[in-house]
Image 1 (cartoon, rainbow, N blue to C red):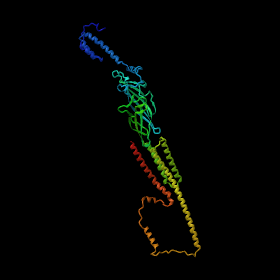
Image 2: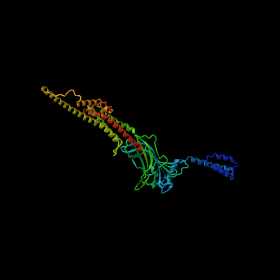
Image 3: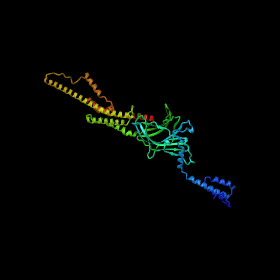
Image 4: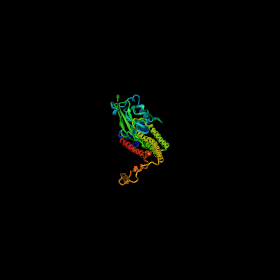
Length: 494
């Protein structure tokens, strides 16, 4: 029944109408209350009540409709509206800042470093997995957020919108992750801002300087540049505030990530200047692995080679087998070290170490060859002296036989007693005085060497004794020079 057709003499109380309107959930209740107060004097109070009741029903229906809004349907309509074929062309780049047509499109870049799986010294490359993000503004993608209820729209197809033509300039291999679904999304915000995020795995080139290996630090870069758009059209820039994030407790085999630096690396070619970004990752090699696997075994081999100095010079099989075994083991160790490194034209720190250790082991083997030669030479000289003494004895025997046959022969004899004024007696007395003088205190090294015979037949033994002192001292001096030099150079590079 229409409000105007209802006849009543009942007078509505304004207080009741006011209470009813204040209890309404309609957002327009206050405006309606003001309207009733204005029209209360125009129409009757009863007619006014039924008018208010009809309008309240309409407001309640409107609230029910708003409560049942399907936002997913709204997102579909907004996407169809802003990405329609007649309204949006993904081949055209967005305008510059504040819609400037001639200004380049600014793209903010940031990334999250998830893991670094390996750093290959031989191939000079490293593998990394990261979440890569780009953000730019495309005013053609603005939409109504329905009073802040629609925060952003999500896409999974990058081909629907314009994308920067970014590529990794030092990439060797790379792939996307599609398990279980493609790890990529695009978010479009109401003001036209676009966020692109994707998870990728890359194998990147890392030129290394191995002069201080394994006491070195390496800087591996991650370079990103525009392939086709010059800086007049597209500019990459790092996002303000922590543009590169690294996962906590990042574990690397044989390396430690000390720090990372962000920088720009724009490149100029004959086709123009292209925007470029780079991240420098500073890795420090863990020395403990090489100390256990290389340095300590090499020292042990060198020390074992010195055992031959303490063996008897006549133990030829033992000394030869010990020297050859240590030499072959050291050569195998050196070959294994070089097999894991690239062939470079300069000398590495590990080459100096293995070369000197190999020289010491080879020197110990040569020392035995010298000892053996000296021993055989001493034996030959001793044999020659023995034969000479036999000939002298034979000649003396022959002379005595002649004396026995000629018994009448007289032999002049020197007097047994000398006169006091005899010059020969004075000379003998002077020699006795010299021998009775107090002797000087001998040197400790001379005393230690005096324990061994000093005749020509003991030269081989003296060579062993000198080697026992010389080899350890020279090796200790080499260690002092080696570690002080390379550790000091490492601090300078740092």
